[in-house]
Structures are given as C-alpha cells and as structure tokens.
Length: 141
Image (tube, rainbow, N blue to C red; front, side, top):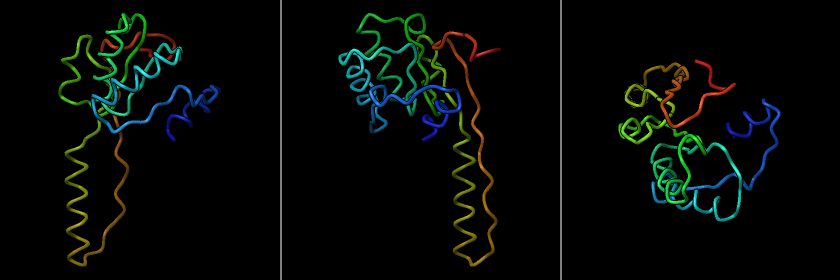
C-alpha cells in the first residue's frame, strides 16, 4: 500500500506487471527478479520489501548482465548487517528493530499486569543511501 500511495503522490501510474510478491527470502528475491526480466518488464530501479530479497535480486541482475546501479538501482528495507557488505553496498531503510521489540514486550507485560497502557508512538525509519542507487532528482545529498 505504501508503494501505491507513493506512486500516486508522485503522479506515477500503478502497473501491476512491475510488482512481484514474495516470502522475504533471498531465493524469492532472485526468482521474482528473474520473472520480471523474463517477462520483459522494463525498470531502472528495483525496491525489495527487505534486504534478503534485494540480495537475491542482485544475483539475478548480475546473471542477466546488468550492472548495479548503472543499469538498475537496487533498494532494500531493514538495513540487515549484510547490506553494507554487498558490492555495491545496498541502499536500504534502517528501522530500530531492537527498540521496537523491547517497546512491544514492555507494553505486553504492562497489559498482562493490568496496567494502563498508552499508544506506542510510530517508529521512524532512516534512509541509508549506499552505492546501489544512482543519484538523481529524487536522491539529493
């Protein structure tokens, strides 16, 4: 839904042919990227729902003879420890997962103890730009 809202906000039409669903694994990232390539879908950037899928897509792009980011920019989500070790380094979104887990567990314990709980404020991700994306009008330093 976030993808569709961002497209709409930027005046870009939704194209279901450019979306593949997966199970968050490297294997599915690899397979989904290969499906896009085999179906002749054209794209200059690929956003994966997590870094593992982006790593799988990276292999598919490489095997297809495409260079990251010269031919296709690649973007993941969750800033896995391996993201910075991919060559080129994977651009991604960092989320404070440890803080999110601790906050959720603390909230659950308060609820079990019958204590009053306040809504948890939203957590904010941080854009981590590495070398897997080209810079352009959307990525200003």
